[in-house]
Length: 580
Image (cartoon, rainbow, N blue to C red; front, side):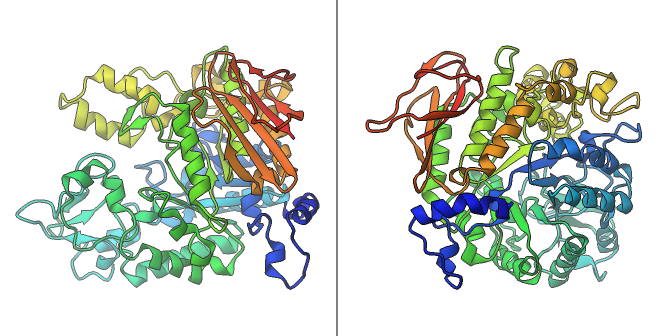
């Protein structure tokens, strides 16, 4: 893709005053940025369990993904991010890994993976996979050995502590409810698990652990994968003294766990030992990392990661675990702050969905019958024209919506089930309130199967029962219908991905919010040399006017989610892109 972008960049580089010198490093910069393929890419996340089932067992698999690669390629995306496909007992849907060098039985075989990877490459796309190395499954051979005795060679692969005053070593809570410490009667010590009991945390202070991790990374890179999305990577380094958290820290213990004393040291070692030897893309799930701390992880001179996921925007409508109404000026302030805080050596990501969050159109758009299509397109417009590498989650391109959950039995997520026991069964929260909040916030909303067509189970499986129920609106929202409709969200996204690829200003251009306080309209420019674009987005179902600063003259409408666009009044959920 870099080659395809060069022609468009040449004129811009001249306009920016750049001199073409073969030996001049600065001559390779575009608006101060060093061009790379992963900055120019559009990423599409696949959750294998829910994408496409090829054998009728109700669980998505690798052959199913391979069968739908032309569909993904039709969007014009460059990179597929594959959620964990490794051997796992599935306590946390694959994020508890039993064998890093083996494919999950439900998903297929290593031969199936190799075929899928070859077919992805054949279509000129790349593949990044999940690197889940803060913890393993308790069924991993390392932990099986580690728990046998205190003097086992693998004991120090995990974090073990003796009881303190007959109780847990400290007051660290688990993200999945309860204590982060689990007593193991074999040796009468506790092991640390920041997530599920079956997900013991690795001890990264042990150089043998780090060597094993680097080895498994090389295994997959040598197979031909193009990089990693790194699960909860800021948690790998712990304060081994494990002091009790203060009341203030307990209110946001994710921040307390992140950015441990050796995190940067270990990431730099990982880069030196592994990533620097390959042309890879790395993106960290940056739980607990503030925007101000971001350059320390992604600054090019730091030699750690390419980019990270910052959750300021995607968690805008959360107050802890509770859903709350969000305001557009707050979202705009986040993107402006990113533009101001991150320099030209610190690349950003832009995303509003993934496997851990509700459906984007239900979360930030309007999923009513009247405005679902328009608001889905509007959100796609924003994500593909803001600063940073854009990430989409399967189904975003169709405008898939949240599931109408009614009872606790509708959910699969271990986080939901544990919290139900801790909060509802103990009488702290009424069950009706708990379920109502989950309809808005549960990550199972995004994990329902892909909606391929109007046949039984939305064409996801030929079996009688999928692993998680299909959203009943699949007869109206599905890929087959959208592929036939030139005005569908799928077709709109494909058009916009192509526009981004052909428009360097949307990749490397400067960003400016023109009306920060406006509660309904998001209006911003992307500027690169003489190229200047205006994006206007109406985040409401009411008509809204917009204006341009004095001296600016609107040019041609490049794209609108309403087709024709005239005047200075936007329809409900209308999006427009102008070129000056």
